[in-house]
Length: 111
Image (cartoon, rainbow, N blue to C red; front, side):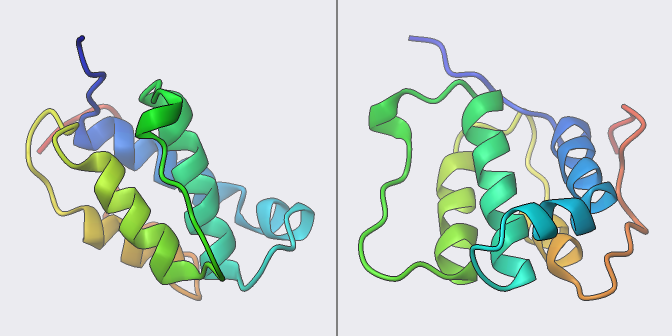
């Protein structure tokens, strides 16, 4: 079975899109605080993008929070990146209160 992988540029593009639509995402998904909502959205996008099977999709029990989603994202990304990059850097930018996207690589260029 071949695993779908993701490049840093592709990951950045997904994060950038979520940041661009931040206010709409938060408004229409009032499941918790903004950081939790944005990480939930990123996890959902990654599950779809990486074509994860049900058995590969993280399951949660009890109360979930931003940390739960962050850990699930790191778990999903493990062994699925085309080349190693700092995922946490993107997660920090995604959940920053100001929603700035400075430093994102979203034009298809990898560095």
